[in-house]
Image (cartoon, rainbow, N blue to C red; front, top):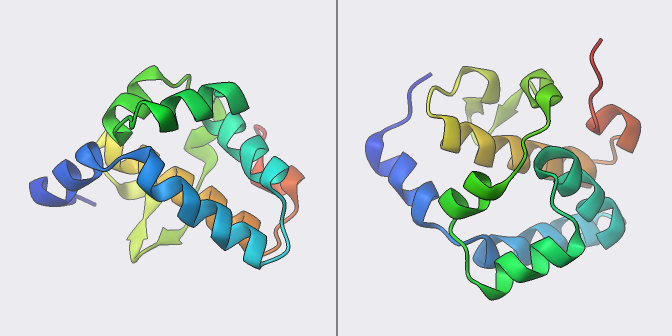
Length: 122
């Protein structure tokens, strides 16, 4: 599935620091912990809590955020709908990576077990 260039540019220029508090609120409202959120983000990106805080302080865009990330090779196993898009069909790598993160946060907030969220080769 192709997204529009405007859509992709919006993700590239959006700052992680603007979205991170929304992730925190979403998971905590559903009874999940900040540690679990950080575990999910670390699985996808390789970033630890100190890395995240530095990226937030720098006001890193998602383009910068994912350029610095070490994407988990099993991220390709992330499947499903997020905001009306099938994440496995998104053609633009950055947009797909942002949607992967959204999908993982969504699964955490919906109560999915961490072991299932942190996909392993099946």
